[in-house]
Structures are given as structure tokens and as C-alpha cells.
Length: 195
Image 1: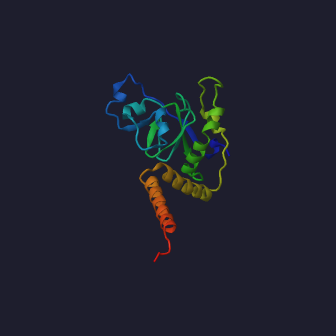
Image 2 (image 1 turned 30 degrees about the vertical axis):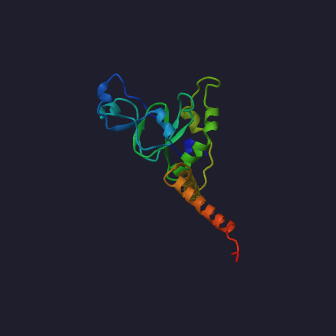
Image 3 (image 1 turned 45 degrees about the horizontal axis):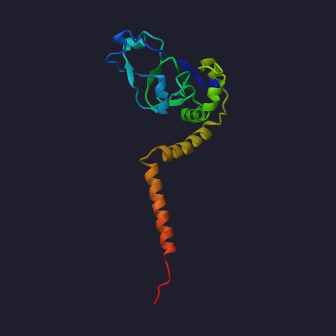
């Protein structure tokens, strides 16, 4: 199935930075392409005002929207994130508003695993290159039934937490290794009593 068949793809925009009234005391979260490196976006560095929002073509996207970097310095292009808040983005980001039969976290995990492929298909071979909405709409991906997507997400979420959440993963692993050590220590050191 193609990305264009599973949701609406849209790019954001940047309000004029020469107009302070578009930025000062802003209340609308606005995501720049560098923030895609966060993976899961709980907050943005910058906010725009209602006037800034109304005077550019950016769009609000709901939380749990998958975002792909179309361009960017270094390794940013092809990087994938998922929003954990409602926000709008700049023009170097593509937001994918999924249909009901798609788990957005499945899409996030899948596209994250396709970083090298996304970079390879981006235009500008040997130059700075970039992805476009057209290229992404044609991007092929496997789409199992929703229940299977949700099972995959549940498993990957668990692994992701164990690997990345220091508060649950590392202490749990340390505790498991400690118990394993104590078990084998006790077994190795259990000799019949000498009289």
C-alpha cells in the first residue's frame, strides 16, 4: 500500500520572522525540522501567535501524527517523529494524518525503520537532496490488519521502553542480573558441610 492511500500528507510553513507579532508571546506550538530528532515530540522550542498562524499556510495537526523530515542539515532528512501534542510545523516537515484503519504508532515505528530507504529515494543524488510530498505519497509499505498493527506496536513499545527509558529499562535489567548473580553464587558456593 502507498502512504498516499493511508492518509493525508501535508507540509507546514513558517510565519515571517521579520514580523515580531507572529512570534512574540506565541501560544501555538510550532515544530522546526531539527526537532524531528526528538523522536517523540512533547513540546516545541518555538511557539507562534494566532496572527502568525493565520498569515501563513501551516496547518495544525493532532497529537499522534507521524512527521517526516523532507529536508534538513546532515542526517535530518528522512528522520521520523510522532507528535505527542497538537502542533503545526515548518515547510521542511511532512505530517501524515492517518485514516481509521492505520495505527499511527505502527506507521511511526515502520517509517523509523526505513530511514536509509527514505534517504535513498530522496531527490538530488550526490547533492543536498530532499524528499517531497509526491515522493512520500508513492512510498510503499506493508499494512497488516489494524489488530496486527496494534500487537506489533505493543511489542515494539515494550522493547523501546526497555531500551530507552532509563527509569524502567536499566533498573529492571540491573535487578534481573543481580538476582541471576545471587542465584548462581549460591549454587556455586553450596558445598556439603564438612564435619
